[in-house]
Length: 405
Image (tube, rainbow, N blue to C red):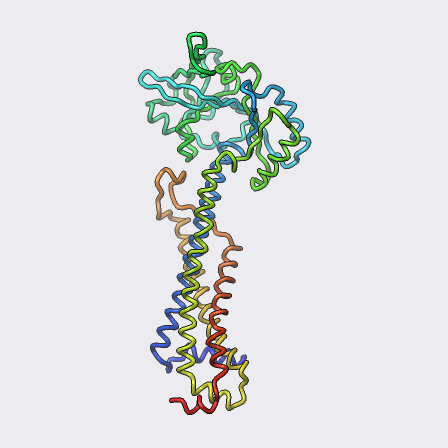
């Protein structure tokens, strides 16, 4: 065994040493452990929030939406979709849709909504997997009555159940005696819930042909939904689409459409690691004080070692090992606590969240690379903290040290 490491372990864990120094040592280890654990838990929660919101938003609205600058919508959209498939291999799925404001009326209430007409065969949203009651069935079998899906919360608010018939008024411009809203009857075939309250309360789904008739669009659509292989490249693909399609097509990514939501996540994620890193920095000051006290306690031992021929570098190495052992022990304990609590939350969901967070419990995403990064940062700070006490120990005069009492 390396004699420097052997002596460092004896200094650090010897039962014959000062009890106060031992207590400070344990405080230093606990400080590093708490800092590392807090940092791991916080990063895991913030990463979980980001992943959960991305998945929910992407599942509801697709990665990219291509709209139109004109009020009449998109006419030759089949050709545009064909060009995009040929020129952008990253595209995995595409589907045209119609989405406009409307008014939903029941026998007792009236509510403003967004009605979205989709092709059930090519729809790329996850709504079909979010059905709570009824079924995902939008295939029209009656020319007078179409089928519709409504959010669970909106249905509860309006007292609507599966099988009920409702009226929807299509708003096409400003209503006037010369511009009457188009009225169409729908039958509710299912209730869905995605977890995004702002959209479950507003968006209702029907087939694209019924939406085109309701808003008198003919064969036009209001947009095209696009999914790509890597969601992080959505903004890059949007720029490619702009160059390919030109006017009147207007592509935008989900990061642009929901900038406020993603900015909120980034604002929460960015400062937390910096702030919590201060806990580890404070812990490293404890390591400095611990090593300084140890240097004072072991002054005679340092003098004896020097008289036996141990170099200044050797003395410095002993106390650097001491600090690194404290840092390593605290870091390992902190990683164990952080990962343990994270896994427990993932399994049992101890902490519940209000509805406006778009999820029912605290989300956790454990990133191995971030764990390694936290460990490296912790050990680096602990190493820096050992330099001054170790240097002071190496500069001691051996004669004065042996005579120190």
